[in-house]
Length: 260
Image (tube, rainbow, N blue to C red):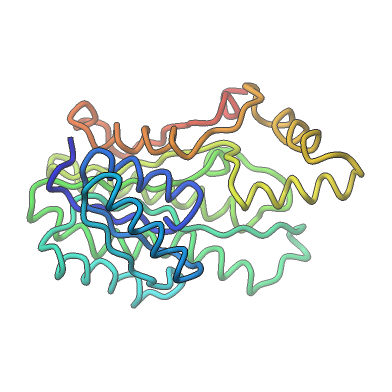
């Protein structure tokens, strides 16, 4: 379905991003991976996707907290492949604390990576996509882009902002062949969520399994984690012809979290 297309997925060396990159590769898109991690492990991931799906896979370690690096990632991809068709803004970090105790440095870092990086990537990518007459921008927001939880001031603010940005870009590119949408996952079993489960288990003196159930029960009526592969499928749908008229919207993949 995506043969000949080129996709950048930020924060794709593990978790949600890797699930999305793998699904786009399965549909024959060439992939640019991005993220931090051990160089050897990243090379294993890159080579594994290439071998499994027979597509070109590059890695770019651009630091998503730096404006020049984000814009450079877009420019380098266009220079290397001659095009950019799909931009998935997935890179994100998390920190929790009451608002009056929230460190300013953590606020700035979360907004830089979770929101500003998407802005810089989109701003650099849109001219190329307009020129091609086709492009798909998918911002990985969160259920926290639609509703709030305590102790997550920066994350909730950034994800709400990301959905606002999605709407504006959807309007500005309407009719151009370029679409911009947000995907809002609920709880996904990623290293980020594993840490929250560990914290609950430690605080409550309960097993990790019970802590995971408690985490799900509080927010996610399905009582099941969303999988990275399911999110990959959602992104793939937004890249399909069926989604040509879906733009400027937020799609929840959250087991009923935001239906409550």
